[in-house]
Image 1: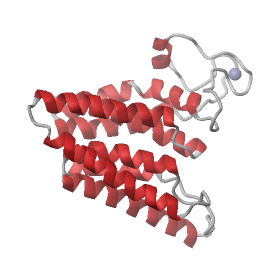
Image 2 (image 1 turned 135 degrees about the horizontal axis):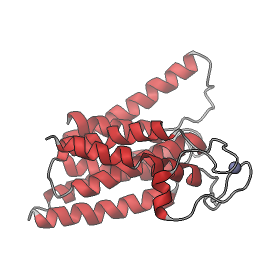
Image 3 (image 1 turned 120 degrees about the horizontal axis):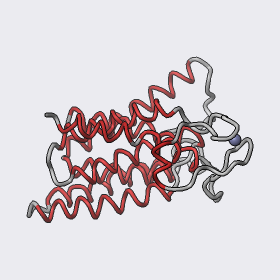
Image 4 (image 1 turned 90 degrees about the horizontal axis):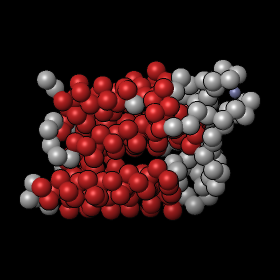
Length: 242
Ligand SMILES: [Zn+2]
């Protein structure tokens, strides 16, 4: 059986927990994660297993909180299918699966509040270094890990330069550069072509989207675009076809 089917199932089952995470983490910078309903103030159910039973609504007033659970579950299933299909029984599969779930969380949070919190990006970077490093050690081959580090430096550096080129806060921000660095680590681990394809597909999709929005007048030249989801979509594409 394709390992992707198994990981997709894991991804779908994590959908409710991810959707609740998105609601709790969709806050402005410097604001603590939400723990109550935004309408009635009812505390969210406590206990980690309650995350997996999340319905997307307040248990008291039934207000819709955060993204739709089914939508998050479908996106998570696609992302985890991509890594399972690509990596098969590789020891790095675990790190990649957790990374895919983290990217789903980042995508929805970025769409909701237009920021990529460090509290999500940093653990994914640490997980990548530890998980991929261990996989490299087990396989007695550290070449992919080195390639991943170079990929992180290249992709992160490119987006850092783009962020600096527009220091007024428009366009790409530091959060995008950090995400690009982490994506570069994982894509670089897979291979140079994956790294190139992922970065190219992500930036092209973002550019096309911006041109479309400008062309239809739904965005002005001064608007900032949310790069995170495009970078992640490019990475998923690279993992699938690379
Ligand atoms: Zn409520």
